[in-house]
Image (tube, rainbow, N blue to C red; front, top):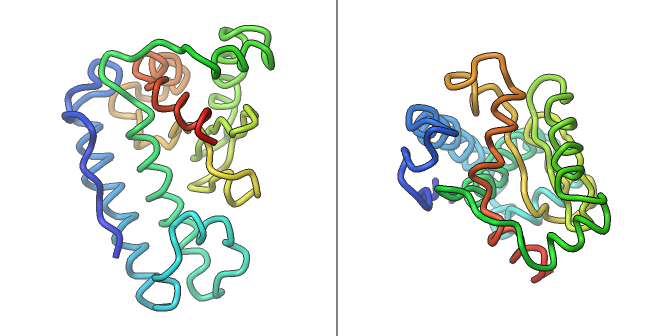
Length: 197
C-alpha cells in the first residue's frame, strides 16, 4: 500500500511563490487522492503489489487493461508529486556543479534553458507537467504522464502545471507561476539525481 509522504518543509515555507493554502490543498487533497485511487487499483490486481511504482509506470503498456488507466493517472500522480515536492526548497538554491556545466553546453546558457522550459510549460494545452530528462531534454506531457512512460527513464525534475498547482495564487496567469517557480527550485537535489545516474 502506498502512503502520502510528509512534505520536506512546512506548508507555508515556499511562500510567497506558493502559498500555504495551495500547498495544503495540493498535498492533503490532490496528492492524497492519487494515493487512495492508486491503492484501489492495485488491490484489484494483487500481483502488481510486488512491483515498484517506477516499474509499473515504465511498463504501463503491459499492465492489465482493467487497471492500466488508473495506474497511469493515479500512479503517475503519486510519483510526479513525490518528485515535485523534493524539487523545491524554501528560499531556493543555486545551480552549480556538473549539471550547470552540461546545461550550458546543451542550451548555450542557463537563461536559454529556462526560456525553453518556460515556453514548454506555458505552451502545454490543458493539464500536465514539464520535465527535464536525464539527457537534458525538456518535454511536456499531458495529465500525469511521466518520461518513464515514454522510455526516457526517471526525470531529473518536473513542474506541475495543472491549475490546482497555481490557480488560487496566480489565477489564469500560468506564466507568472512558472517564472516565480524558479525561486524555489532545489538544484542540489536535482544535480544529485543527475550525477548519480
